[in-house]
Length: 208
Image 1 (spheres, rainbow, N blue to C red):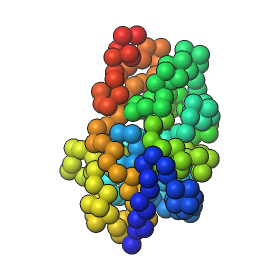
Image 2: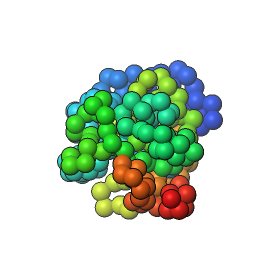
Image 3: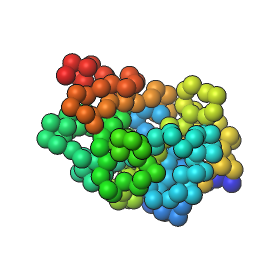
């Protein structure tokens, strides 16, 4: 049965954040809040936890996961970022965007888009997520908490616990965080391309 932590959305309790990070480091799968919706997350190098998330979401091997990073410097470890891309990222992080970028060798092969060798990365503006990433010292491997057959993410932590208490190791109740997906922007080529319009304003990238 999963654990259930109620963590303050503005002032996360350090003790609970540390316990959550330990669960991730120990191979656990967690439900956590972001600035767009609740998400499933696990340790970046844990294939077993990744497979568990695939089973929960009923995802095939072609579904791309996102690396949720604490800041720009962490993104630069996992993606190739030139000066023009860096300026764009600096203007729009943290925030409800997922950026597709060329992956570095630090990214596990199973997380890359096979043909283009790209990876999705984001820096959410959520105090709980930021605290958790700070304790982990590395990104979370993550995917939105949208159950099979649903079009929108789950939003009620108590409903999430009831539904997934035997499937995940921890549900973090961080209050209401929304139900709109991130805006996805492909920055892997010369011209930015908006692949999905979501919570983040796509206009700055469409104008480039």
